[in-house]
Image (cartoon, rainbow, N blue to C red; front, side, top):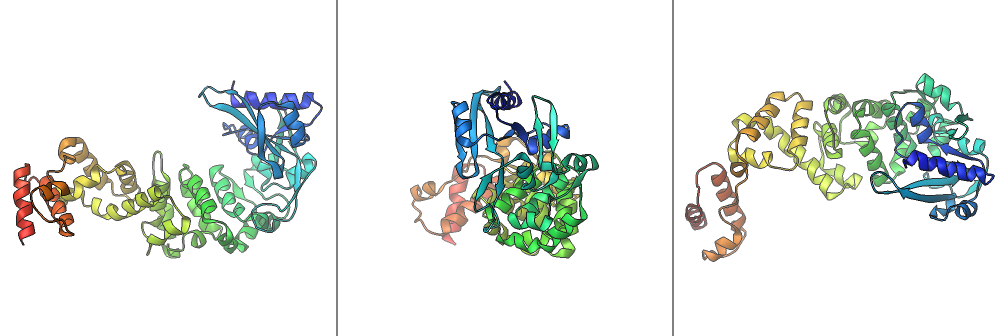
Length: 400
């Protein structure tokens, strides 16, 4: 059973019990666009308690918002199928600029009116094969327009992250932005600063790993959000960021997308801290930005400088980065050396370790690091080839 089939079965059982039940939101939008939905959500007139009375395997997912997660059989990938079922609702005030202070169960018309954009406010009855559109979303999809539902300023005020979501939606689906929606977004751009770093980073991740990342980068500036999200990048250099993100090819990671934006910035170090990136993402962005200018001179680099770059886990990202910046010759040189030089020569086991130095009678201290780095460089450059030669070089360095 597919997720869509399971979601249809959920709708069928709710309708058979006398409730209105419909597919809701993004899955309807995606199917109308001919895309495969990432998941299926169901909206219904049944209350959470009524939903739980119908489905044995379920649990409250967002009790305060009337959401129940219904579990089904295992799908083709072996994972349990699941569908979120939400009761039609209206939202109260959004005092925190993120979520309503209270909700009230309501009608599908009122439920559609509380959503962000018209293309996300559509419902679909999979049993009757009928679209239910209370907000003009289908016409906007056909016209390829992104339009806020109702008053754009109110929609953005309710959840400031919708400013970034508007950018992502317009880019991903190739939509023009309704003038009133764009005007409201530009006037409220500064309010994005109240959104948590984690939520901003999550939206940026979705933007930058998608093939439309170049368009999204352009729209960030058009919406007045570029300087809010990336204050390190001067306005006059934003076109460079747009060009490089647009030129990235193949699967693109979040760190690579960030590096493509930040490579020409005046300062890059505060970004990871401000966006609260994971250590892994922060380290990869730092590495890409640090070694990129070095790799551009790959043909003239000594093995001790180049080989550690070539065997780094981020080498595929680096090659993509170089090509996006028009450094095809450097990328080709790196790839050629990577293919021609045996792995055991690119990254041989070290000839000496700190323990070896202690066994040779040397007193541990801060100089050990320098000694090991020099021994490793000499090894990669072919200047020393065995442990005895390494031990003699180490003694010479420590005797200086």
